[in-house]
Image (tube, rainbow, N blue to C red; front, side, top):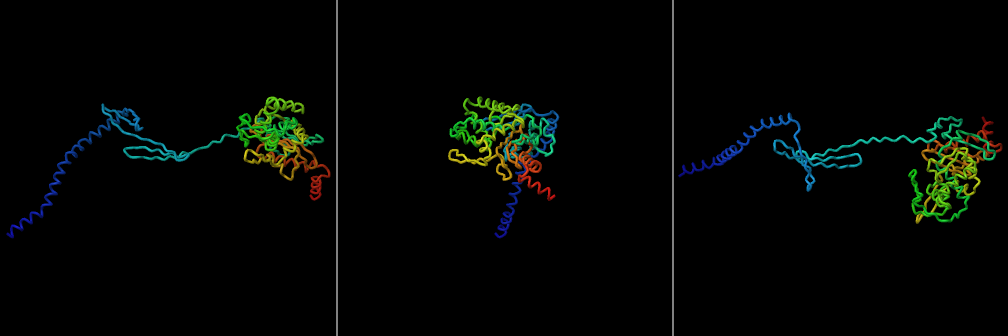
Length: 402
């Protein structure tokens, strides 16, 4: 009995090992045929790849699934179709960053590309004076304006001139004639005028704070046109003139002719059109006539003005900073600018005891017309001061001290 028990225990100890060997033999029998088949197909696959490379691209047919929105590419070879799916999506991450999302071999591939942007600025448009070569004219004061004229208003003596007969666009200097005619017409200043679509600038696309539907009095519009060079205000004044805009423009040209402005032509009341043209000689005549009108003198030299528009109060300021300068005593003034005309300025001012009319046309640079006026003022004070004036006394003192 003891021997039989020992033998039975010993056989049970090797039972797990027998089971493991049996499982291993079954697995080998199951996997071996597949491995042998794969080994046989590998050379055949290599030969097929070489054949495809030699024969060129495989014909493909592109199909789109309307329900899923996916694009399917079907490759045809020997009556069989090889099908693969390609999904592509483009995502923009800002102005210059583009991410492309693709599915390739069952994997999602994201490619981020940053595009470099090269901005090429268009060269600035030349003014008529530049195209005519007027900026190449030298002068004793080295002015930036291609046209300049300084006249003693009382004696008509020409103190300085530069290309004063050249006929050029005059931009918003036009509004000086517009304001003069409105003032001389003695129309009701309290009559209300509404800004309409007709007053919107289609010539240059300039902006205005006077929106369509804004209603102001004629006096307020005249103030804004002369002081702040408001284009819609000037156009509305001409549009509502008795007889309409066409009549007003014809009166502008008739007035110019009456003043002896032989080189002047107007086509509209704002100056936005480059066809509004004149010469420095003609504009000196206009400044002299405008100075004789008390309304034009007062409004053109106003430093600032407020108007009520609906529930708002709008603040407007002069376009000529010399008006606020204690060094200047200005009687009438007007500024102007469009690309074709350059920076323009006309003034009547008292300098060194003299009443002077100054005209500056086609000045290059935003502040150059102001700098030219300052340069002329210092030059007049140094060389053309009236005896007994403060400027003459300063010059004498300087000469004695020197």
